[in-house]
Image (cartoon, rainbow, N blue to C red; front, side, top):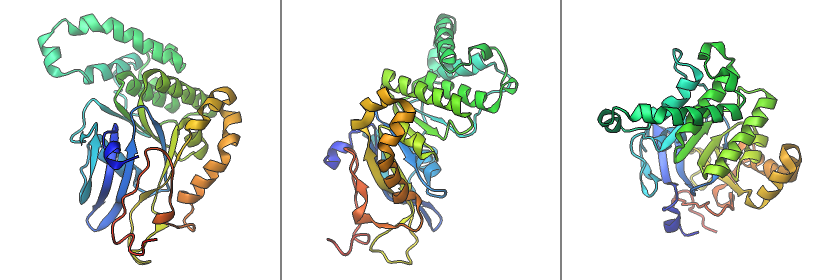
Length: 311
């Protein structure tokens, strides 16, 4: 697809060179995500996944070159259109589970609306409670609705944080290993729940995980962010991370629905092994000109220094 067309996607990141002091974290990074995609992101430790999230959500701005666009506009400061679920849940300790969940609706409502319409909360509260209770039931937390966070296990608190983010229905939802604290059965259930909501609401999700099987099962597309690669800038150049692998699972999604987790993972295992080697093996360093970037929205913009010896 033409880069100018990609710039109209829900999220478009192009030529981003970003770091701190003299250290490069993201190195001429290119990534474009279409509205409604569920993109899973893998990467070794230190590859800049958290840095990338901060740029997207607006907690940081590009320090050197490049741009981060949301709906063709600069990402700018954080707003209600971008939500994030971190590895560590952050719930208000003095509020019940239900109150924590519906707070996401209050936070996403403009202050002028609340100030001008004193009856706004009375009118909307019942509807929000019904919606929140339905979501809590779907993640098996309905009996915990009126408990405080300290009365829940860590895994249960993380599920509340996920429901809180889903309740807000952000245009873009960033998820940073949100299922890492869940036991296997709850994790599988929550994966399926996320897929149901993604299909139902057409959400745009960027999901970070260290579990390559989870990345394959959840993603309509899998991208790998890694510092393990080479280019024409020389062996001694201190490189930052790039998207080194980008593969679509669209053609396999009908089988995912029928096969379930245990049947689907073996089907796509060759693709997962390929992604694992491409970005997570420090001894396997591809040249930038050989990256496998075959999803519809994948693209690459190399600098002259990276691509001196053009093929």
